Amino acid sequence: MREQKIIMVNDTEAINNIYREKLLKILRSKFKNVSSMGLFGDRFISKVKFMLLAIFSNIFVISSNLRSNVFSLGFFWTRGVVILNGMGRFRKSKTLRILLIALFNINYRKSFLIQSYADYRYFNRYSNKNFYWVPGSGGVCKKIGSCQSLLSVQRNDKLNLTGASLLEFSNYIEQKVNIVGCTNESTKNFSNFNFIGRVESKNIFLSGGVFLQPKGYGEGFPHTLADAIVSKMKIYISSSEYVRYGLHKLGGRRDVIFKGWFLLKNTNLVAQEVNEEKIVNVYLELISKNI
Image 1 (cartoon, rainbow, N blue to C red):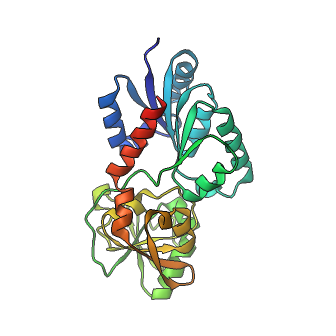
Image 2 (cartoon, helix red, strand yellow):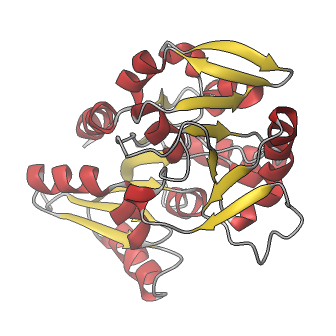
Image 3 (cartoon, helix red, strand yellow):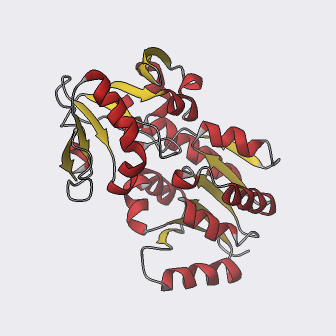
């Protein structure tokens, strides 16, 4: 029998190193042949290498991010685990949903770990595959700033979708929001925000002690939200995202602030479910079950 080769694929290898670092480290300690690969942001040769391995080798594929998931699902005969982070800006696309359902159904040798509770419920209705809801990639505790300051972590391309929701909250409480991860140059229409720009991951919450999670993008379970919960920040979240992320299923409770916005309660209980150690152990259990 050929040696089982485990390949973790993502849009870029760097994304694996950032968001799957601990999982990769443990996998490499448990199995002999584990590698990380980027299919889109890295060299084109990576796609060719992956295709050759899928055709001629005995590989077990762990894929993350929408583009890499769709690409790897094309090799339906391979065994593996698919991590569906979220639908992002395409969450309302019926065409994409139909495509994913078709790909899920022909990938009979894979299991699917879906981070969005809403997506988990949706896809579970249309397939008898091995679907599991895993809320995110795991949060870690970080230092936080003043509890008098509001903070949200965004990207310039995401802010075009989430900005209206953040402005709604900002206008209601009549306070500016510190936006980490965005630059002022391409977001000039949002005068109610203070743009912090990119900072090191360990310092991502130093601009505020109150975390805002808006609606508009459709992530699976935002990594920064998990970090904020584990870091014991005060968290305001839009009502739609509270349900989408399944916080009510994780022990979370809510106080209504105004229409469309909640204050997350029972964060200590939720933190037990979304901390990195707990989530990585769930991934390892499901991966080991399928290898």
